[in-house]
Length: 235
Length: 312
Image (cartoon, rainbow over all chains, first blue to last red; front, top):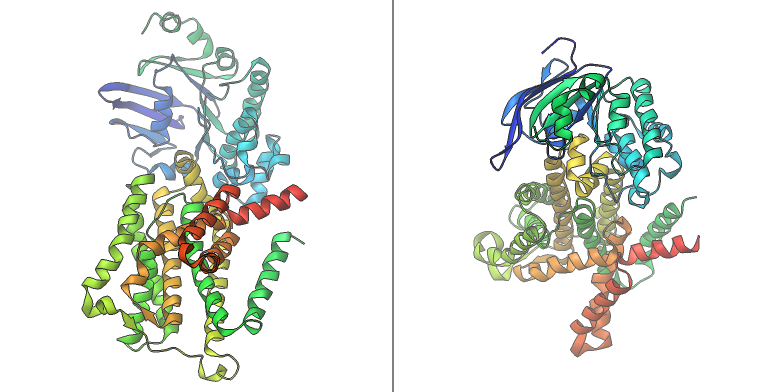
């Protein structure tokens, strides 16, 4: 849409069994920003992620990343374009070591992978099987795996899910630090409003597969339609 | 020094000196062990690392064996040429089976590969003009190369040939499984979605695993045919496929060393069972297998590693 955007989703539409999971959704992600994708359950946030990372093929619409139309790029080629993601329900390589998990995504070798593990504070468990780690540590392995790919666009699917208050505070700092240290752009799906309002530069609201609103946190917080959707009034 | 390095070195020395310490008939048995170890290593790659099951790898052993038999008998080629050809033929067939396997999961894949194993022997009997039908093919007896004839008796030469090829194929598998290829195979097995998101093409790696393991089974079949100097349909029944699978599971599916242990088990357990009770040998064999799996559910190699880990 505009020349300054890193990612443009244009008119994305996809149906599952006749139900529109996404209907004509368009939005932009500006480089260097943290963009939040929010909405009630079933709004189509993860579906949107899966379309961008090409795990789903939208029925119509285009996805432009850094000026290239990636709507037909195979899913396993998205990483080399510079897009890496985490998953809502952890999708780690359970039987493999923490280091090997990170190395699958790493552009470089073991040394780069270890550096990233060190960054998220997991260097000392690098040799352990990933399934032996706590939930929080495994979420960090997912983050490290994505960071090791040196992504231009980092997509976080509910990074705060399952976290308590203090862990969310730590996560807030981590995400800010990551944006700066890895010089990356972030698109994240998140339910935790405090986190979203606290760190996002821009927020896109989805509801029942449609885009409801798009703006900075202050505008979203005072948007009547958004408030009604969240209070259960539907969209 | 790493324990694994010491064990591998000790094992290599043992393999080298063994034929000078044992009678000729035992050298034959250990040549079979080497060939079985190669085939079972193929299953360790396929089942243990890529997570796809095959109940039909005996079919590739058969193709490897018959490829060598036809090349030697009808075309008069040497076995040193025929063995790599068998590997390539089986690799390509494995790729084809792998492409079909992409559409099948778990029990359905097991059933399809089982059908493959079951169809080998009837097919071999059907195409008589190539395969020699029920009678099979007798290979021209192979000998130690001229220059080495007074150093090695025939059985010792084929023992070294088999274990030499096994060493190369084990080294290749080690390098592959330790590196990017192995990580990608296991990544697809553990989470296909995440593997795709992190740049791994599951179609490529799943098919490659089938081709790779089929090539190993083919080399094993080629070596067995050369050593036995005979191939016939009845050698390659369903029992062979299941025996290889049993060897892989008993040895331990995620460890390469398990392939050797599994090969020793399938070669010597039946002989031992025969001695325990000739009338009930298959019952004794079956009970021994069940006992191994009950007490060492991650295979013999896995159990040994666990004992070592518990000590340190």
